[in-house]
Image (cartoon, rainbow, N blue to C red):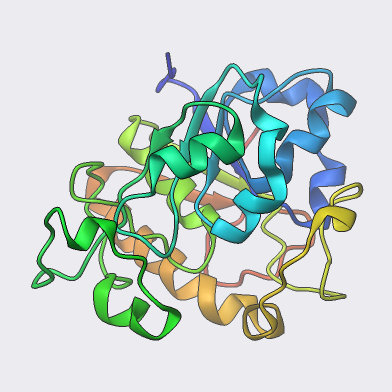
Length: 237
């Protein structure tokens, strides 16, 4: 079970992940993303939750989480609801499926749930401008899995959500933590050219949603490029 009395630590896959001291991890409810399992052996422990919402990353990761015992959340950015049987075969295990938030006037029914929406229709079908904090209504997937992980932490009841590994800049097209680069097959050149442009407006919007909810969002990424998110350090927040 999640422990909402703890601060949540949402971890991206940026190079700064290599600076995380694993001794601090038990202090938090941890939310890893994408290829973070590659750090488990070095850290001597897994995380509490893992979130993946990109079909490209799911295909790269395959069965790497087959024996993961924590909560495993999976979405597919092309669908309202992920094709569970398909991804179960690829991942070699069950998972908690994540529904994606649709535009308010978008009909959601047995047909539209099965459609794999093309890249050109994503902005028409899915809502990137609001949040519901309701699994049944769906999560705003944003342009980064970190956005979904933050919403899950809020839904679980955490009132302080810290970020690390959210470097928000790319020195190279595959600028990730050590040991991950070799497994990256898909790179979105538009996103890596200016990740702040895609991520920071949604993070600011989350801060505004969080104010009346009494939730703090704090960026603790060493050397991170985010400018408009409250800054802190791990442990003391």
